[in-house]
Image 1 (cartoon, rainbow, N blue to C red):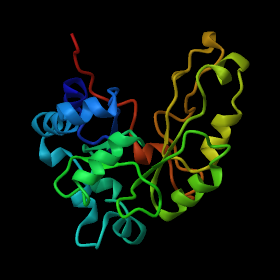
Image 2: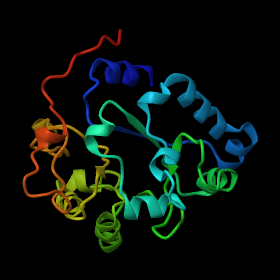
Image 3: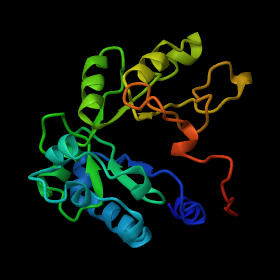
Image 4: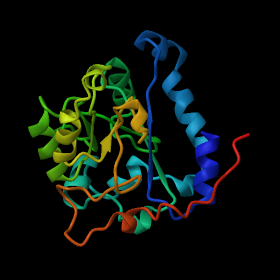
Length: 226
């Protein structure tokens, strides 16, 4: 996390970073050891408050987070540069535990992945853009941040099949997470964006959008990680 923070500090005009936190422990272990609280404490003590965007900030004076996002939307890009958002990447009992303990997410550091009609709806995630394409598109149209995947295990890589990647792009997904990132053509299968680290959303972006308006890549200040 410190490496990411140092990079963010060195490049204060970057588009907002989204960090997905995925606990790998069993739900019972997470509960017993209070791992979610440990994660939030780590975030709060590592990442400066003025460099984060929290659920409370996004909700503002709206009745709940979902209402804020579907009526007012997310903070503007220019107001979000140099900042980071954290998301609990879980849809199991671990997520349920987090939401039960924090029913409004007030003063919490992580957004939760819940269904579209939940009062805490903000980030919607379905890993298969083929079977859940309609829900992903609807969520994107409502203003939610949307996550999906272009591959499952090694199936697409072995078949060199980009169908799911193309479907993922069509849903308007903001995050396309893969086990095969990069542009190394020797690998014969790699997921990457030809226009740079970001692209204009083909579903929701205005016609005048240009990728470099979002992220001025190529002008980053490098940092040492040694």
